[in-house]
Image 1 (tube, helix red, strand yellow):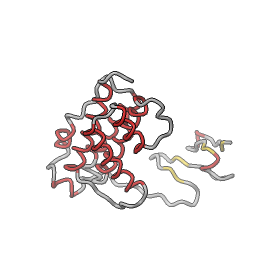
Image 2 (cartoon, one colour; image 1 turned 45 degrees about the horizontal axis):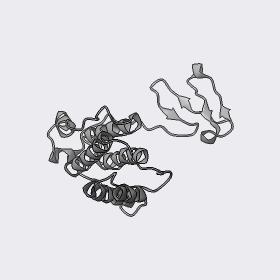
Image 3 (spheres, helix red, strand yellow; image 1 turned 120 degrees about the vertical axis):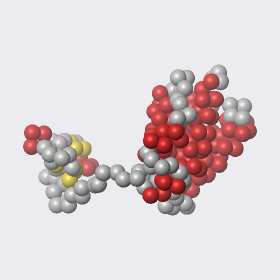
Length: 193
């Protein structure tokens, strides 16, 4: 069920779970989303996070940090999209420092996508089980499995609230995202089982 409103009045159609009966999402001339009774907050334009200056002096330097993170042609589009997003999150951590942590977590999704492709009977197995099965069957090297298990533990700590408000500096995040890029590239270069 959708609640339909009039676009010419700056209103949009929204799925029922997001709008109660009689409630509409309004789109004003400067494209701010709001519901009736909600106060709007105008967000400022991004400014450099002061912590970014510990690693780079200007935004253009962020390109140098990620220039080697190239997605090879052999990577499936689903994983390639995730890797490109992780790379962009690293660049944007100049403005939002915490994005570097999100980039690490996101890059692991790409590895999981490729592992599910490469490991027979992957189904709905957890990443931990995929890593173990990948190592046991030779899909993953011992080095790859070790790195992935370390990344999995970091991701799980954040996802399950054991590690909160973690801000991983770009200097630490870039090598971890690079590892995900490398493992995905290596898995995609190897013949599928």
